Length: 300
Image 1 (tube, rainbow, N blue to C red):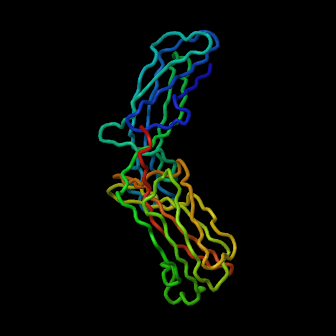
Image 2: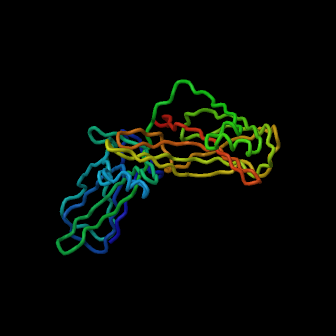
Image 3: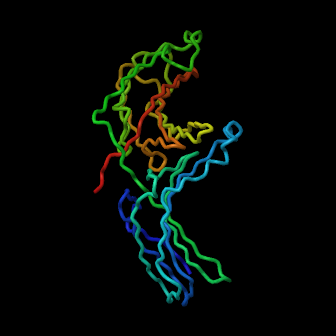
């Protein structure tokens, strides 16, 4: 016997308040008795600490339990027999959170993950194992966007680097890089854009890269652990670029590995952009730009 879950939408994307519907397809070889078939709609936030934070925050290490935000169950067939061949059993749920909870975007992170699943369970007799099948679906939640968005202008020189000691500034090749980002508030469904210009540089440049970083924070009243990890790194320049040339910045936010910025009671999901310039002599500079991801309303 085989069991499959087919959702009504091929892309498996749903929004708060919409109906998650589909069919459970049971293909049985011969008639099969069962003690009931049920479907569960479940969503939770999983939290964990990095290995280096466990010792520091051992007091609340065991308190980082998953947060259940959706948990609904319906029985789609009572005890009986399934006929030979395929059987379609329809189901539907209204996507809404439990009391005192809220829905978040589906997100697959390192220390924080938010997942939503539909699970079917066929209860067998005492001498047979129950049969389960799960499939994940994607939730997208609209977030507010400021009425006015402002471009972020920046200028990077050796004196502006925060990770360099003052007495070591003179050892860094002289350079001036100017540019702008469209906004610090970014719609997750649209590309991250901007531009930069290498005004001057004494040392030849090897490459210029754009690094997307997630900053995940987990904890409780006893303390919080904050961990940045890289999501993706794209090269926007290769070789010693022409001085004074306007270079476009363009990056697509990867699906599932990014989500609108979240600041909940026990966890946070934030994002940053690092502009990384590598010189041929081995020097490397990195300029950090915190960004706030949002999602515009594009459905209904």
